[in-house]
Length: 166
Image 1: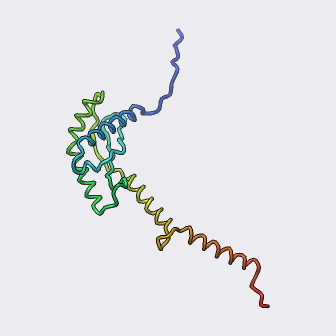
Image 2: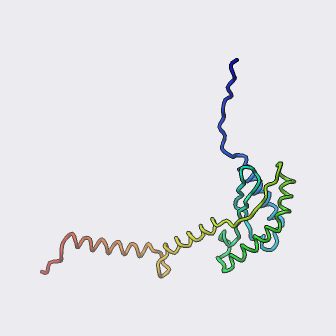
Image 3: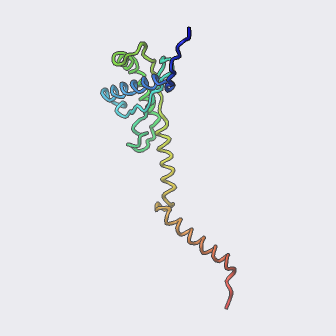
């Protein structure tokens, strides 16, 4: 008897974990928006990373100061710590909420991490802005154009040779 061959359809690796991660991000973000008291008003859930076996999920968050809505503050680390403690306190509630809203055999164990991506992007933006502005606060373009003109003049003088006295 000749066996039948199934047509193999390649799927994206771990598509289920991506779908579960997005579902968890939505549930957690909506609940934090609903609760929205104290330091949690300043939180954005940026991503959720779920392990292949769906046992653990790392919830990445950023605070309002990271998103650029507030200027950089001296107490960013303090705010991150306070938010982290508050999220840890809410972990059981969030896991029960996920169990009620998501069709999962097991609810992943949540852990929370500060998402440094937005903070790093803001720092790069700050550096780029400082490069665009001259030392006197004016645009670099004007200084650059003057420097190019000076270079062109000196290059022309070098090509012609030293000026001759008449």
